Length: 190
Image (cartoon, rainbow, N blue to C red; front, side, top):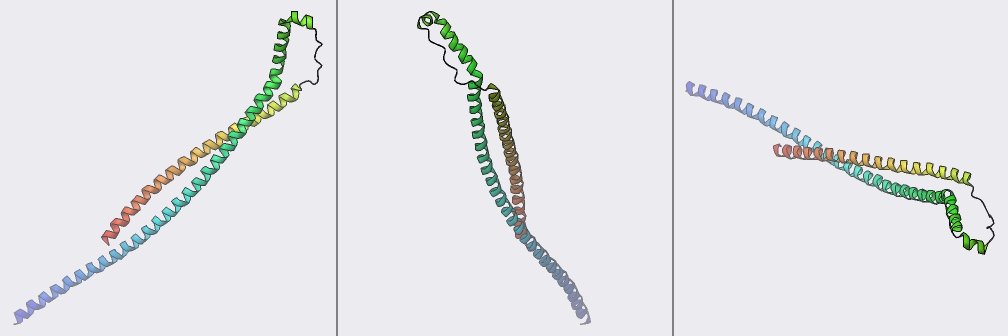
């Protein structure tokens, strides 16, 4: 009977140790599960923040692109107007002497007819202020240069902004995928 009691006591002690080990493992698993659940909550918060940030970035990009489109249109319109004004002024001030010479050549070619008709010279009503015209043309050339420079700058800034947006968007997509996978695996583990 003592032998049976000793065996029973030994078995009881062994089972108590096994019970303590299993209880310890359960406590560790519960703690690990709680930690994983906390990690999942944190990942979900990070994902929500990432998506909110991406949405804000998308909105800002749309706004800056719309501003670029408007500025580009304005600059192109201004540039076209200045170029047209320059063309008209150059034709008037620069082409006036050529036109007079061509007109004089036509009259000289028809000299026989001109002799017979003999009309008096046309009175000079006004003279072109070529000095003032050249200064106006100079000012418009500076304006043209400024418009072209600003247009090029706007296009460069738009290209840089688009590149940066695409880079950050790609990084956000990668981060989102990684966080979603982490969340999935941690949810399965818990």
